[in-house]
Length: 414
Figure 1 (spheres, rainbow, N blue to C red):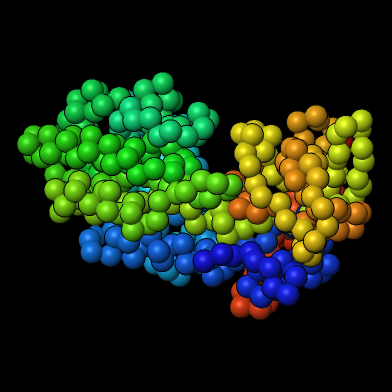
Figure 2: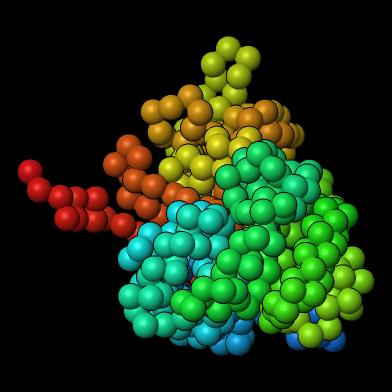
C-alpha cells in the first residue's frame, strides 16, 4: 500500500492530513502508518506461507515500542544487535524465543542478558565471540543456542556502507573457516548448534544476490549434515530494498520464488527472514516546517526545522528521499537545496531538488524515512529529538513526545 498520498489536495496518512498532525504535534515529527507497517510484515509472511518460516523484524531500523508491539501482535520475532534492543523487544511483548541476536561486538553483559532471557539463537560472527559465548554459557549453567553468520562473499550491488556480505566486510565468518568452527561448536558442552545465517547487505533491488548467497549456505548446510550436524534454522537475513526514487525492488513473491530452489532442498529447516527497511521505510515520513528561503547567487535554499540530526541518511549516504509539500501546489518548480539549521555544510535533506514555490510556515514531508530515520537521530547542536506519531484509520496519537531542553541534560552534572 501507499502510506502517504494526496487527498483533496492534502498530503495525508491513513486519511489524516499531515498539516493537521504538524499543527497538533509540532515539527519536526516522524509520522508512521500502522496499516503500511503491518501490511509489509504480512506480505512477506504470506510470500513464504508454504513453508516453515519466522519473520524477525530488524529492530535497529525503527525501534519505537508502539511499532515493536505491532510486531509482537503479529506473532513475529525480532532481529537485535544490542542488549538495549533486547530490552525494548521484551518490553513490547516480543517472545524471546523468537529473537535472533546478531552483531560483531556482543559484550559479556549482553550475552548474559540474552542467555537469561532465553533467546532463540545467537548469530556468532567470529571464533573469538564463539569462545566468549561458551564461557558466558558455562557461567550461567545454560547451553547457548548458536548459528554462525557466514560471509558468503556475494556482492549485494548496494551502497558500500551497507554491503555486509563481501570478504572485505567486518561481518561474519569466512566460508572456508565455517566448517571447522561448526565442529568446534558442536563439540562444546556449553553450546548447542541450531542454525546457519548470513546477511549480505541492505537496500538490495535484485534477487540474484540473495539467491547466490542462499545457494552457498545450502551447500554448507548439506556439508554439515554429512558430519552429523543437523540444523533447525536457515537465517537468510534481510536487505530487501524499497523505492526511494526510481528503484524497482522485487515484490515479496519474487523474492520468495528466487529462494525457493534452495529452500526446497532443505525442507526440514525453518527459514528466518530479518526485514527492517522493507517494513519501516515506506511506513514513515519526517514532517518539517519551512523556516526561511534564501538565494545565495545562483543557489536557492529552503531552510526547514528538520536537520541532519533528525535524518542523517542524506548526509551520511548521499541518500535520496522524495520531498512533498503538505498542500499540493500547481506553481512552477525550481531547483533548491533543502537544508536544516545545523552548523555544518553537510546538513541537507536534498540538493538541487525540483520543488514548487514554498514560503515560511509551509509544511513538507520527507518520505520513506521510517527506517534509519529516528533510530539514527541525535542531539547534535543540542537539538531535542523529534516527536513520533502513529496514524491509524483516520486518527493519530503521539507515541514518543518531543524531547525537551531538560531531556538534553538528564543525567549530566555541572
